[in-house]
Image (cartoon, rainbow, N blue to C red; front, top):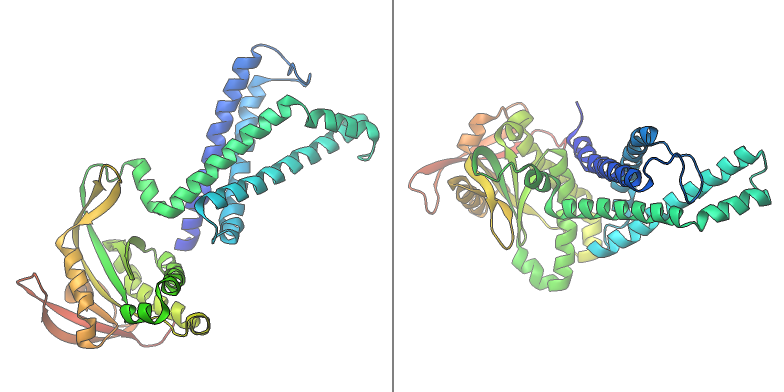
Length: 368
């Protein structure tokens, strides 16, 4: 079984291959339309065969796209993480364009050297290379490649900003018509956020908030959570019911997030003079999910479960605990092996007539 992190990386890499594949088919068909029945390229005299090109070009483009996607997701995306949206696209387009240009020129040098039976340092070889390099056909192809890189990176950055799952849902039209789902929700809120903001000042507090959310993201991805919303210093994480309760995933995610911040204690203390802490409420129930909005579209969940989970989280301070879980959700999971469960009795929630049973949880050992 692939881990959620690996699955997510694969889902981010595949679009690069698809974009390059589709663009290459368009290029091959346009090329056919321009060249017609000729058996060579008029500008260079090189042989042309549509039947082989329509197979080789898309396959090569698909592999190139997947290779660039892998480099982007595994390395360059992290390298330019702090750059602006536009800055990332421009810098990375130039880098990939430069790499591909050098690669094509290297192949041209080797090809000419082989065909002429001459050294790669031969004057004749380099004369042919320069003729090719300054040919309009070469730069036409290069500009087309640059446009593919630009579109690929633009798609990736939009996906990163909206969220991979959200963008995929928009493309597939999954929530174009409203549908009911059973979901687990975690409402997670930073402790003493107002005091911290006053202590640090708004700019420094915003920097800390960025790092705080970044450090929480790893465990959310690892435990298959979907970030539904950021609301100030609160983050709402959601799972489909089956995914959230399987292997106690949603609860494991909470303690993994705690551990993630604990490991960064020295870093927070050094930069901000404190380490943020959080509390969270858990509940599950039916929601209606669908696209909403005209000027700005979003995929929204509506249902009583959202208000209830928010109210549960609000009682953490009353019970002096960091985690509260509804009795209904507790019954759906098998927590006894890993966690100590403490019954806190029934509580009245604002806006609800029925009382709800609440529990707090502690792991028997810290293995997250």
